[in-house]
Image (tube, rainbow, N blue to C red; front, side):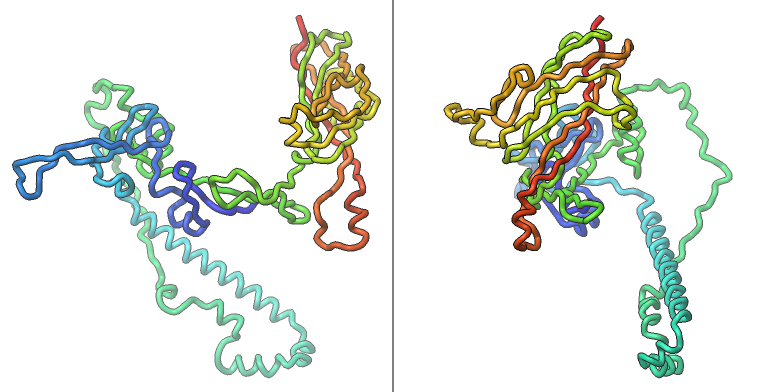
Length: 419
């Protein structure tokens, strides 16, 4: 999976991955409620403010604050000052351990950089020792190595040295000091009455790990997390299977080659009362997701089939081939369109509408248990790759139209037995 872009689910602002990393994967303008985790909205109100010319007189001035429409929490509950502008500039609490955390991050980044340099040096030194002398004389490397030994270091190793300036400056950190005495609890800790609405829940504390507020009066709004649009590639050939549009308001895909768009979909439409060792008729639907006609054949699973381990009933599927019409979005809304004549067997096909058919299967439960009745069978269908080939040739036209038969295993849960 590859990340294409990051965007805010509230204001739909999108940004590249580098900018999202600098913003810690959070939106700068949108906030979540610290109590119920829903999106906060900006509310406007009028407050009296003294005039700059005459402080004794007041005039109404617009002020903005954050409010939650679900739990009625507002930014005024924690003492946050109102703002004169609708967006940005909200007061945020400062973490007293920010400098210590940043110092530790810089120290371990430098440590990781040095360890990587040492590994690269060892790799190059090992590769240089394994180089035969004949190759160095053949390609004229001997004279170059002799010149570099006398003066400057080898160019490949010189690139691995620390940069001049700040990289050579070693960062030192102060080790944490263990406390011999822990601060005692207040005297009224066990006698003070507790008001549960004023105590934060465990989830509210863990959502703010840098502060972990114990009281509801210490809850502050959290910047909204960014979401991301991702592309999907095949693990074997690395071709794009799914690639969305860059615009966050669009739900379309530039590339959509997932299997769901090509495999016929099986669904349960109606289930009768299932009884132990008695035959029942179940109505299923089969939908064709592609635009060309698809031929489908059904077959029961063989004995000792690994896909049939969960089956608790015997299934009898139709032996005749089922033909599905191609998907046509315009035909679904055209009532005057003439239906195609597929000469369906009424004992097998219950109905046909556009690219969907309803067909019957027979089920005989084999186990008298309280668990759901489960059946498994195979669906064999043809597939034609109508996409344009990457390297067109004379033989590519015939190969693209040739049908490939695919087999899918279907497992259905039909519910419990009737009493």
